[in-house]
Image 1: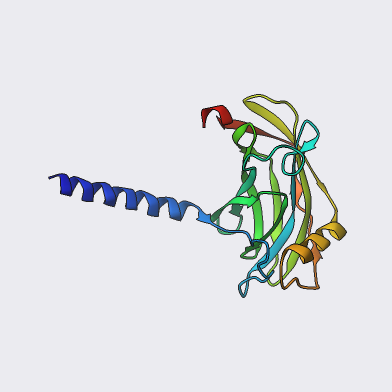
Image 2 (image 1 turned 135 degrees about the vertical axis):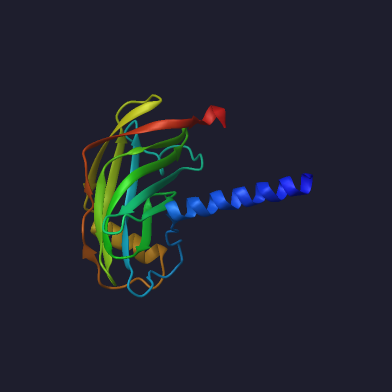
Amino acid sequence: MRRRWCLFYLLAVASMMSGLATCAQLVRPLQPGEAVVAKPGDGLIFGRIVMLRDKRNVFTELPRFNNEFGWELTQTASGKRYVISPLTQDGPFVLALPPDLYEVTKLMVEDRAGQWEGLLVASFVVKPGTLTYLGTWEIEFTNLGPSSKVRGRVVDQLNEARDDLQQTYGGTPQSITAGTLATAEEGYLSLLQSRAEQ
């Protein structure tokens, strides 16, 4: 009887996991040292995320607490969802995706305060066989509490980004297309789990 229960439990867990897998596909960004090359037909995007708390960059100016930034994206033509977590742990990122218009439908942040989730509406286009620069997306906490408003803006730092790309990744292509991320000015992040609760 116990063995039958265990088998039922395992089948139920496997069924739930396959259901989750069809809901959103996990995508891994390129890691430092990897060649900046996409699968045939895909495109590449790159840029930098800057999270500002008290006017200081969470990734570079505050004590390290496994800081991470992630996205949930929706491909507008197909409705497919992609989870990229972490997208970056220190700011810069390179990501390969099928060509289309994408909307950022969720932000996921882990910093010294804990785990946050929220939204700052943004969108970008991925072009086939192209490396597209999205800019530096600055996201600033505007109040500190269990729910925080955030402000967003995109800064063009292409020269610095190109240098980072060449120093961090291999096989860097010569041709880069500018295709700045379109972002809303305001959004929010809610604290899901504080560092004290972990």
